[in-house]
Length: 138
Image (cartoon, rainbow, N blue to C red; front, side, top):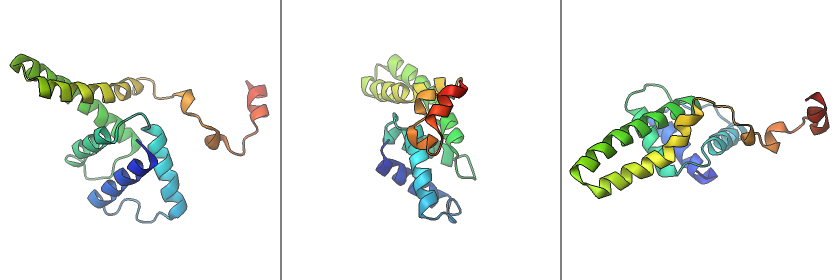
């Protein structure tokens, strides 16, 4: 998901949940977009939109990043179930669609078991922190 796509996703959240982000200034909005984009950078926008739709239909409050991880996990399980049905019916197109969803939501299913990914710690997260001190402390 790109910055532009993260912005579009957050706009959908704001439309679905009008009180979400209402008090955000430009700086907070930008920080929120960056966080969502970096967290879901390897997820196609269409998968994120599907996860948001799944979430929106059963929740009264705007999603957090953790909520979206759960929604992606549910999306994976649903796609796996539908893929089994498609396979039995020999419906190749539906099976391929389900396979695409599973392939692009599976890594989030696994990340919930170990959510800390140190390769996601970027330089801008450590702005103002002395890198030399970081190395010496460890």
